[in-house]
Structure formats: C-alpha cells, structure tokens
Image 1 (cartoon, rainbow, N blue to C red):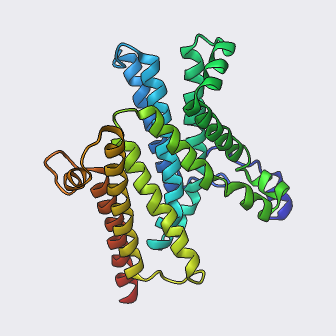
Image 2 (tube, rainbow, N blue to C red):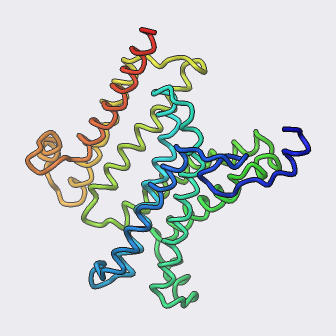
Length: 289
C-alpha cells in the first residue's frame, strides 16, 4: 500500500482493532473482560440486587473496579517481561483508560447520590480528607487517560510524555489510601491490593538494578515474593494492633492459617510465586529450543 493510500485510510476507533482496522484477538478479549464488570452491575440493577442503598453499592463497586484495573495496568509490564510475551504491551493503554472510565463513573455516581447538588457535594468533598485524596487520584487518572493517545504522545514528545505518565506511581498509592480510609472495618481487600502494589513497585526497583533486557535473577524474584508477603502480613498485624489492640503475633499467626480463609499476605505470596514459577517455566522452555 502506498503512503498516500495509508494516509487516506481512516483509522479505526474500535479498541479491539489496530491502526489499520484489523481485528486483534488479544485486544478484543481484554476489551470484553474490561466490560464485564459494567455488564454485571447493569444486570444487578435490572435484578434489583444492589441492596437497600443501590447508589452507594454502585459507587463502591465502580471505585473498586477502577482500582483493580489500575493495578492490572501496572502489572502488564512485569508480566510482559517475565513471561516473554511482548504483545501484552498492546493492552496496557486500554486497561489504564478503562480504570479512568470506571473512576469517572465512580465520581458521577457520587454526584448522583447527592441528587446532582454540586454545591453540597463539593462542600462534602472539601470537608473530608479521604474524598479529597480520592478526587486528586481521579483527576490524575483522567489526565493520563486524556493524554494516552498517539496524537498526545507526538505533541508532548516521548520524554515529556513518559515523565507525565510516571505520575501513575504517585496516583496509585493515593487511590489505595482513599480505598483504605473508606473501607473502615473491612480492610482485607485494600491490604491485599497494598501487598500486590508492593510487589509491582518492588519489581520495578529490581528491574532498574540490572541492565535493560537482562533476565532478573531467580533469587531476587523469590526474595521479592517473600518480602512483599511479609510486609503485607506485618502491615495487617500493625493495623489491627493500632486499631483494636490485637496482639501482633496472633494476627501474624492468623495470616499463616487457612482456618479463617486466605489472608491477604498469603494471597500475595501465592500470586507472586505463581508468576515467578510461570516465568521460570517459560525460561526453561526457551532454553531447550
């Protein structure tokens, strides 16, 4: 195809297609997965299955999925590198934009819960630390989503664009802080998310120690898995000790038991170990070729 023909050809706006309009199965599958929580919530609305305060439940669920997808977007690079699956980079932007959209619905539903009385809603946000923190994180996510296009990349230039998008490493802890503050008594999932974020950030620090493209040493990855899990368990124990005076050792022992279900620290360890083992399997398979 000539250059002039390529220029005349309209770009596809469908997120499951590439710039030439061709279907990309991986992007199509991820798009469906990103849409499923919204469809599930719509089904719950139709079934009147949102409890006595449906708007409150919708606010909670959209915020929860926004943060889950934010973490998933940060997980793309480690998974791509460890599993040697470069095409995963194709869906990182899509996941990040989905996170911002769910967060925008989260805010929109908050205003709906105040009957779109903007003055009342803004005054409530201004008086609440956790709402201000959440608004700051949401604003940053919307900026990143708005500048995620190829056009904005060209306008800003690669270096400035990368510098801007690194604020995600500030926005994610802010969003997590907001999550913790609104969770109140039930901090199981925020603690799990904190542990996964520790692993994701720890992986990036470990990556910076070694040359670009170098395979990370397995002892380092094992230490990262163990360290992230230990910090998660210790953080949970410290939280309950400060909040209710629960003995630190008792909470730590609970983390190592499955009698009360899978605790956040153990879930972080299993997730990190699973990814590490999968990466090891890929390395062994490639070495045998």
